[in-house]
Amino acid sequence: MEIASGDLQVVARVVQLLRLLAGNETIDLVSAAEELGVGKSTAHRYLASMENHGLLRRRDRNRYEFGVLLAELGTLALSRLGIIDLAGPVLEDLGARLRHTVVLSVWNGTCPVVARVREDRSRTAHVSIAVGSQLGPNAAQTVVFWAFKDRSYYRFGEGVTPTTATEAELADVRETGVSVRQSLKDGISAVAVPVRDPAGQVVATLAVVDITQFVPEGTDSPVAQALLAGAETISRRMANPLD
Image 1 (cartoon, rainbow, N blue to C red):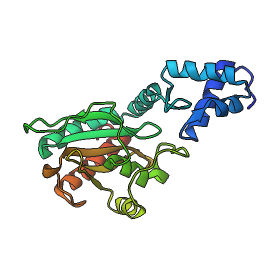
Image 2: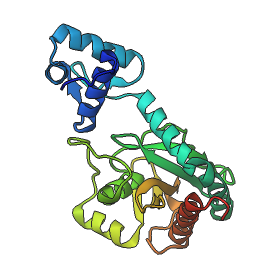
Image 3: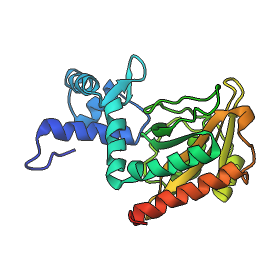
């Protein structure tokens, strides 16, 4: 790739590697060297420096994936759209009415990451989730992001670990707008719905997460309907913050 006149070479090369990673699940020394057109020792210095500054992190001994800093920057970019701040009152209202922990999640390039939490403490036994937590392929939020990946604010690179949901389940989520998932191992269930920006792209998920016995299973349950209404409120306020 030819570097444009006026670009700093080091910045241009970092961007090249990030764009390469955006189209793949990971990058390694060989692919980085080929992309930059440099030797392996030079490519290694770039990868090591990007890892040190949080742009990359090691997947294993030889492969790198998106780092924590990129997830933070992605969340910050969404905060510029106002979604995280606008979602706050909605999470508070839903948490108080439903008596469940309510979570807003965004996509960090490879999986959902928790951006805001309204924790319910009305019961002795309840679920705590930390902001910044990354969610796995079984999560209801992951299912929602994958169901609407063709109508997403985010790019889904080749090789990103997919959700465990079947095509039939994904189709059902697209039809109902609701994903319900249980973790038998942890005894936790979640109900998740998409949040859209003014252009109709999915920018986040809104979810209830709680101990399984307290979470209704149906996609037409009062919890699911409350989440859909809450997501619509956030979307509407993104278009008109004074609404």
